[in-house]
Length: 281
Image (tube, rainbow, N blue to C red; front, side, top):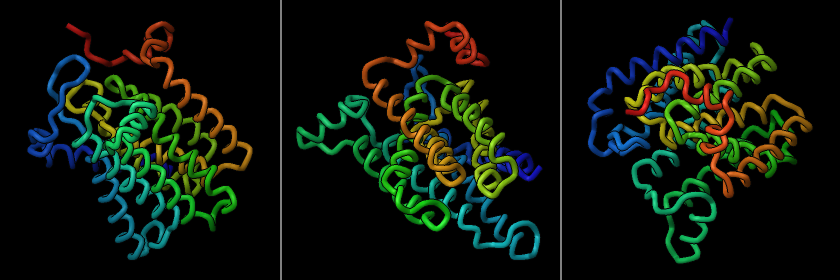
């Protein structure tokens, strides 16, 4: 029940932030052209991050008054840092990024030419955030796997970002992954810690799906990073290694094939992907 309450609270907090920040949503600096040529605010994930920050602050106040968990929960602190860290590097790419270079190869080519793209900053920054998270959480997990577990967290963030190519897609993929994790974790400390984050992004689902805003890297990176962190903190070595291998394969595959084309060619995936989305004119 704690997980359900945390999800609902996270969703309500996001709706409050979006409604209260409607002037920010319409700011010119956030406007980008989406896949259908429509001008839409990007970096929508930053509103979910702000919502999680509000929820965590309220949790600490209530905890200090003897309601709920006491302040000082390391897992919650790690989840909050993941939101802020991945949100920051994603926001930089959302606002300052150029569509001219994409994918690992594109960014590496730019770097070889002596140009530091925001994509390289995002990749390097995401890796650094993942290393800090895993290093800080080494008292909970096996500290000897820092590099491998950090790779899992960073690749999870990158994979959800790869899925953010159509309205609602990254959120649908993330919610399916979270449901699988929630069945495993139930109401344990990690499951409760990430629940407000899932709820916060659930609060953006309608806006993202109906093209009122775009999730952006600041959203997709956070969702993937938090889910990857949850796997690292809550599962054994075998499970983490298996997830890491899958993420490596999916990341490498994305350099050679288009996930959008694969989804369009597989009817069940196409139906799920397009569910709730506005039809093209």
